[in-house]
Image (cartoon, rainbow, N blue to C red; front, top):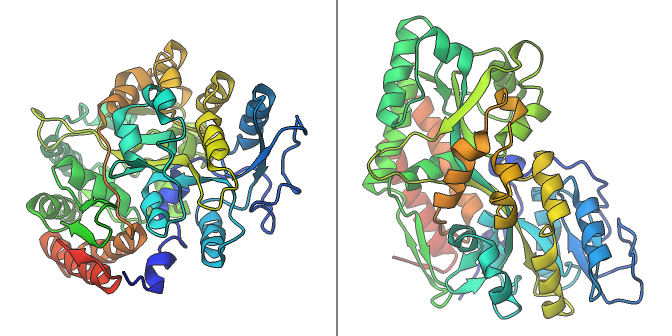
Length: 453
């Protein structure tokens, strides 16, 4: 099957989800180190007589996580190099894939990027390397996000079950209760606007992963893909559910009920701080991100709460996810079985998991942490002491059933961003945007050698 350069280029840029799926990098970046060279580790190898597995990753507490693993392991040691976060790492991995050398044994990858690298045969199916021993440590939905067909290409670490963050002061002022459905969300938005209040939310063109998640929540299945039939892919981006969701948000924007500011920008964060938006539709990593961006401090301290994500059909609730990362074994690994032991063991010990969720670095998918009473019952300071995990995020994570990503997710997100922009400027409807996205992405897939179903 022919594969043009664009399919490999899909790994080169990180979408907005890459910015937020994990907390910002706080470690040392060693741009020219790494690969299978274990001579220039960021960490110090504790047990020099053991074999070494190289690893790339950017979690802010990776140093701690690697040290914890190395202290406990009597089989293998991890040599960690931070080559950059998100797109920076993917650039270097793509270069190594093209060159056939220079990749690490284990690499941290966001779940939605796994198909992009798997289709290039750059990742190893780890199902035969100890999967059965750790399968019960994660939910079926968490495993589905890192699987393609019957193969497993990563070990899930953190996720992003979605919810609705809201301003308690605005809801109190306008006598709004958290909407349970999207119909109620629109009604509440209209009520606040009619009373002269702020925007109820935001439609950001630069967060297409949110739109995709909400379309899936309504019943859409954007992609069907099985590596057993690598030349065939199902693409359904303009089904009725997808059109309905784009039209819904387009209408909210047209009525002036929500803003149209790109998110993850100083302008957007300023609006959040100053009460320009009553709600923020986001994921479980958001409190950490917002805190780091200066939200919830000073005058807006204690003004935020979180509620379950509104549903399209209250009688048939669907939980969705935005973001999340995993550890994958690369096809350049010197010893795939040993590398898999590292992938399974990193960020799986109690000390690392506790440090991760305590410092809002990860929303843990390992059930030891997800079900830990200390995590579940945590009173989250950003939410003024609300037990957000117990009330919102843990139930959402437990109910999440996973999804199928495509091998060209970045191209899809770029197309979605372009068409949401057209919806925002009023030149097309949401339904028309869905048709354009379908045509664009289907044509792209055909150019890459796929048969589109």
